[in-house]
Image (cartoon, one colour):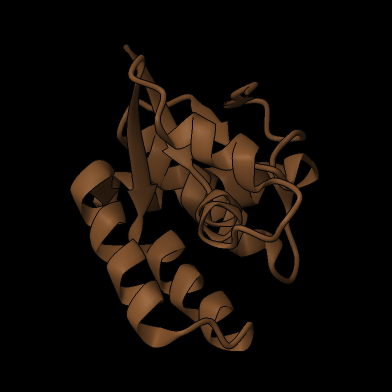
Amino acid sequence: MQKIMVETNIFIYDLDENITFHDRCSKLLKNPECIFFTSTKNISEFFSVCSNLKFENGKVWQYYVDIRNNCNLLYPDEKSMDFFESLISTYKPSGNRFYDIEIVSIMLANNIREIATINKKDFQHIKEISLFEF
């Protein structure tokens, strides 16, 4: 079984049936060969994006319940903060890239090395992880 970190955009595109990437993301999340993980950072970002897109609240909440039932939820801790500091020193991010670094630090602290995302450019430069192809 592969341990895969799921980035926020996968959830958004799976939830929005009218988007180009919907079928691809939906298929990924049904892959029985994967164990899925996400972080509290991804959850807060999910709610923020859904709010900005004006998705119906009941649909968003039900999808959130599905995330909780089908993904292992990861939290920042002391170990992830050590990775966070190291990654900041190495990559010197700016702006929203700090959020990507935080997600990667939580991955590394939990021994997860692959991330599923549509926005590959956000993570492809980080050598400590790889992009999950789907």
